[in-house]
Structures are given as structure tokens and as C-alpha cells.
Length: 412
Image (cartoon, rainbow, N blue to C red; front, side, top):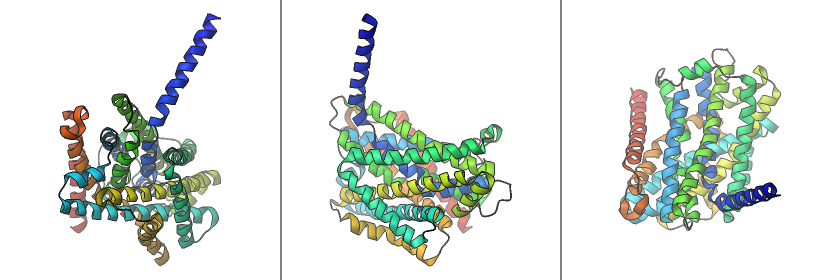
């Protein structure tokens, strides 16, 4: 009887702990969907098909960078109760603020390009829907998902569920394709194979360290800023970030591994496009692997498109204290993607280049984030430790240097 009573008490305490802790989880899963968006599909599969395991180190490094950056973003919103864009408006000169807003809006367009094109491609692969029509369908579904943002927990749960669909799809394909442990280990050693591999590395970085979710994550955690035990809330937010971005990192790694195992050096045609990868999976494995790929791409397009539009609203509201109707914002940001689909441009190349644009936008969000989280007058006892600041500064310097090298190599 005593044993049963103790067991019941233990279960009761565990339930109370879950009920208390669960509301603090969720924001990182919304941010994480941006790290598994259609742009990642394009860059990671192209990298694996063209260079095998050589760029594994880029994915691992980019994911570690993303964990650090998103932890800082979550901390900023949780501690201050305000998001990154709002704090930039309050503490930076107006011309700087306006410049940051303009580049953030351009990044939002590049983000929407990747997500709408990816959703359209998935609908074409699954049902043969023409790409322009698929782009419109993706916009409509994303708009419907955005309707959940009025109830933040439901929105976070919906996006988390779509991330799970993506993860399961690639888990199946990875188990079928297998992993070469020796080549995987070699891929952890940094190296490049010319300008094209550098372009892909920059695209992978842009697709992993996403600038728009640096703004968004800080906005999502403001809803938890009234937690009574802020230090405990910060611990749970770090756990939230670690789990969510860890799942997204596994998705990214799985994409490259699948492409390296099945396509690198195999002479399979068309593996530099998502359509070719879909067909190649059907040939190299079976139609179920191809189906899992297309479903994961569709879930990614739908979820990341809604998250991208949500981030755009946060950016405009924070920088300008203004907002526009979601329908109008969707019309503006979808225009470049629809133009790509209507003129018949290569959608995979468009996805890769959109991620390069995103990589150029990272420093404009990251540098203000680092600066703000080092200010004791703003963060109080939760100001960055010196080691954290140094690590974040090194990340920013590395991204800027990689972009500069890319420009010089491309123009040269």
C-alpha cells in the first residue's frame, strides 16, 4: 500500500511539473520550421548529390550557430518582454532603423520565394498541379494556418506537428538509404571544392541561420515574459531550442546523407533539381520513399510559408509600429515567387539563390541581437557572459567573411 501511495504521489508530482513546464515550450518549434524549409531541401540535396559527404561540416556548424543565435533571441524576448525589432527601434537612430526594416522586408520576400516555390513543387510532384496554381494553393493554406496565431499555443502545436511530419519522412528515407559512417566522419573536416561548393555552403548557412526567425523567436517568447521564475523559464527555453533545432538539424543532415548515398557519383540524371531528386528516390529506393519526400516538402512549404508571413508582421510592427492586413502582405511578398513560377524559371536554382540572399541578411539581425543582449541596463542579471558574446561575435564575423569571399570568388 505504501509503495502504491508513493507511486501515485510521484505520478501526481510529474503531472504537475508537466502542466507547469509545458506552456514554456513551443516557440523554438515555430522557429525550427524555418530551418527545414524548401530552401534547405534545395541546398542540402544539391550539396549531397554534387559533393557527397564533403559539406556535412557546414550543416553541423550552421546548426550549432543557429542554436546559439536562437537561444539569444529567445532570451531577449523572455527577459525584456519586447522583441528584437521593437528594441532596435527604441535604441537605434531612425535612419538605421529604417535601413534595417527595408533589408528585413527584402529578406522576407526571399523567404517567401523559397517557401511558395517549394509548396508548389510538392503539389506538382504529388498531384500534377501546375506550378502557378500550386503557388496560389500554398499561399491560401499558409494564410489559413496564420489564422491560428490568435491562439499562439494552437499555432505552435500545428507547426510542431508539421515539423514532425518532415522528420518522419526523412527518417524513413534515411533508414532505407543507409549511412556510410567513414565518409560521414570525413565530411566533418572543413573543406571546399571550388566556387560552386562555396556558393552551396553559403546557401546552407542562409537556409539554417535564418534572419527572419531571429526576429520572430524573440517575439514569440515575449508571451512567456511574465513567468514567475525567470531563471527557470530561461532554462526551459534553452531546452526548447536544443530539442527543436536538434530535430531540424537531423532533418538537414538526413537530406545530405540521402543524396550522398543514392546520387553522388551514381550517374543518376537530374539530381540538381528537386523534381529529379523525387524521381531518383523512386528509382534508387521505391515509390514510398519518393512519396515521403514529396509529403515532407509539402508540409515544409505550408508551415514555413505561414511562419515567414508571421515574421514579416513582427518585423513591420516592431520597426515601424505599423501593421498591414495579412492578405495585403501576402500579396506583396508572394509576387517574386509567383513571377518565378509564371515565367518558368528553374525553381531549384531559385531556391538556392534565395538562401544565399538570406545569408546576406543574417548579420543585419545578428549584430543588433548581440549588442542588445550585452547591455546590462536592458538585460540586468541575464546579460550575456563574456564567452557567449565572444562566440556570437565569432559567428557573425564568420558569416560576414563567408559572404565576402563568395562575392569576390563569383565576380572574379
